[in-house]
Amino acid sequence: MRVGTIGTSVITERMISALQQAGHPVVAVCSRSAAKGREFADRHGVKKAYSDLESMLQDPDIDTIYVASPNSLHYGQARRALKTGHDVICEKPFTSTREQAVDLFETAEKHGRRIFEAITTLYTPNYRLLKANLEKIGQPRVINCSFSQYSSRYQSYLDGQVTNVFDPAYDGGALRDLGVYNLHFVTGLYGMPDTMQMVTQRGYNGVDLDGTVILGWQDKHAVLTQAKNCSAPNCVLVEGEKGTLMVQSSPGRVQNLRFVPLKGDMIGKTEEDLSADIGIIQDENHMVYEVMEFARIMEENDESAYREAMAQTLRVMDILDTLDPRPGAEVCRQTA
Ligand SMILES: NC(=O)c1ccc[n+]([C@@H]2O[C@H](COP(=O)([O-])OP(=O)(O)OC[C@H]3O[C@@H](n4cnc5c(N)ncnc54)[C@H](OP(=O)(O)O)[C@@H]3O)[C@@H](O)[C@H]2O)c1
Image (cartoon, rainbow, N blue to C red; front, side, top):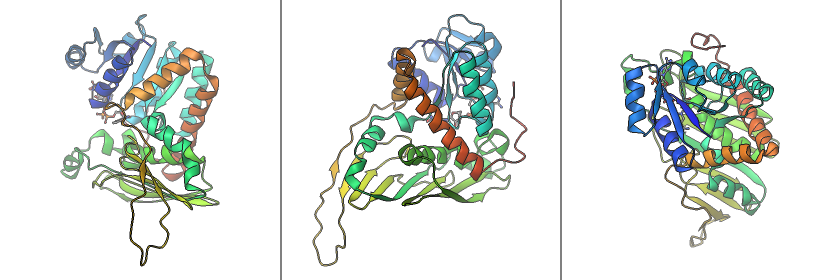
């Protein structure tokens, strides 16, 4: 991949370093501000800086575009990149609606390109190890996923300054920012649920600041919590009739994977810790794993892995549409 990036926040920095680490040159960055773009490019050893997307899309040195703009802009920018013959890595949440997501996959197909959702969870080695060890817990019954991250922008939100991540017009909010990791985690294991519901607390502009989602399958259910107004030691518990698989990190990073065998009723018994580490210590920049997998899928033309990634994105878009369809948040969507 020879990449051009959109956005100059910390997530683009992390992606540039993941791409460089995996041996994929970042050819150019794109910022709305020429000065900011130049400074950002220099800081990351990138040669070119563009201040408008159309110019970057005309650069023949670039074959892949990384989209890390505010959520509601993903669709228009990704679509334009596909239409001009680029592969696309698009940040989560993929698009504003499922309909837009379908359109992007169809556009990619029509132009012979690929588009991927940059959802770190699914590509981490520990998530794959967890999947491979699911039989250890027997019949799964309850999945708990929590992703609470007190936002560095929350105080300014409370003070009346609404940044994009707290703005419904940009598809901000806890569900789309953090809940999306929980949704990918569980649906990546167990597919579409039969039932879904959400309780949420909204701020003064209607944005969801926190929430709990409950997904139900016939033989198990999942309780997923996302919050941008508080913070907790995040974890995931996949509980089954023979034990639990435990991740002691956010579902975005999937660090510290342990198997905890069933203890049963402990009354009158002494507790012995029979739990065991079954994960690995992952790279500090966990974005490197998705980069490697997207490159592999493209190089090997692995149609089946590509279709599964697409199906997974559509599952989560389906749930987002159902739980929080965002009526009235049309203002900042581009439909180019
Ligand atoms: N994978 C992960 O771990 C992870 C982590 C954090 C965020 N994300 C995702 O990355 C994306 C960016 O998130 P963020 O928090 O960095 O967003 P952000 O700070 O609001 O915006 C990202 C970049 O987009 C440009 N931008 C900002 N406002 C814009 C506007 N009104 N119109 C056009 N461009 C604008 C800015 O670059 P310029 O000023 O240089 O143009 C900015 O650096 C989101 O989709 C988010 O969900 C992913």
